[in-house]
Length: 322
Image 1 (tube, rainbow, N blue to C red):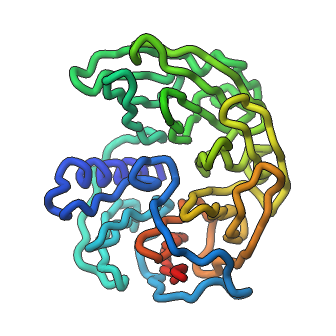
Image 2 (cartoon, rainbow, N blue to C red; image 1 turned 45 degrees about the horizontal axis):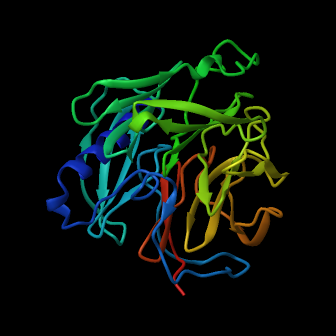
């Protein structure tokens, strides 16, 4: 699984570096700003009881947990067959265009993000022990924070080291979270981006690997109770106050589009369309993804009114356009 993450990150880098090939159709992990929010409009605000219409499905892809990346021309998906990783490219109807082997290298878990603050472009990454800010112009290290030492969890010796969640950034504020009872932390960039200060910590939203999103003044995502269980939470962006912690199925991944949350729990594959409100975890519609087997660890992806769900050897495309 680790190598699949590397393959996906390599794919993202390629798409960013050569945008002219795709005529401004650029794919990113978790959307154009890597924050889990897809710039879609005109999507369904509720689904039929059985779920949105299935446009097509492929159930013969190489098995994997990496989410798809979608451009106007193609769908990119990583998978593994007989311990060899492949990148498969499909057209928008799900037909295979080509396939190649992966890089076959070692992995890290967290995708870096690019922030802009004080006229400076800063690459922010989460390593095993540290959060690091790097000047994108010359590669110099601007600041580091030893995340390991901020209310270090005691669940297991590797608990504060197993970081899988891409940070959220907006207007000089940076939120970092991890699972295993490790607190979520909000930082503020200072000194023109040359430093950071810690603003608050939150003990409820310790996201495992399903990621978090910010809608308005609130952060949404699931937390970690143990490796099989978790609740869904809402936290105030400015204060760190937990607005709710609600049990629904188990923990999972979350993305957002057109003012709604797409929450995909990892155990049985229930996918919910949720209204983002700090009052409660308000499910509007839900259905279960039944294709294939194993944990449902991928991120819902939306592109031009189509919802893509990857599970095991399968990839499904649903029509969610009004």
